[in-house]
Length: 219
DNA sequence: GCGACAG
DNA sequence: ATCTTGTCGC
Image 1 (tube, rainbow, N blue to C red):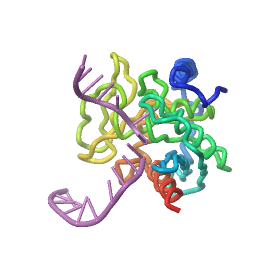
Image 2: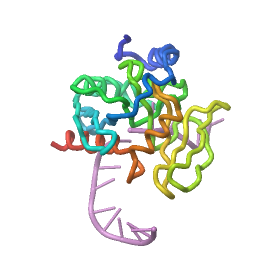
Image 3: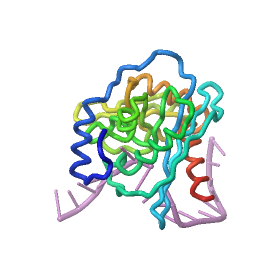
Image 4: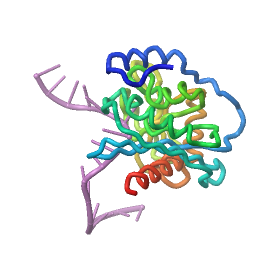
């Protein structure tokens, strides 16, 4: 589709081009059977990236399969260009899987991005698969605090445009920021995040992927 | 110029 | 993200 070995100028141009391909229309209306979480960890000294995509049974949240990848980091971390640093490794991890999940939950933003094309959008368009972004912090936009109860949410806006939602996944605990990646509506993304966050603030798929990449790094 | 800034 | 132990609170 495009090269990953690019400079920041070209990277931004690629984002402005690919944003046109993002769809918020569901690919299929069937119930979720398998949900996957994607995350990456980084080695300080060696510049090694460890990526994992863990597929869970959407019902019991048990791990079904784990896709892994390790590679040298080439692109630096630049706010707004996270996908150029992490997506290559996550794409490798995706192809390491034997089973395809119905939805991929990414650790980072989707449409809630300066150019409306965060990591979740990039992975969704590249893999042509449903994805959503779930971040712990805001990159761009503003929003009111949602009500303190789990399930409450408030729109995340940037220039009068709704780009995502602050979603409370636990009572009294800071919300996570959900946005569209590809082939899902914001409403559905919100529902799915709540469905796979029965106990903790962070959705189970992302927690599983986070635990996996940390294991990879320390072994 | 100053502050903000996913992971 | 990463460097890092205990500790206060539900």
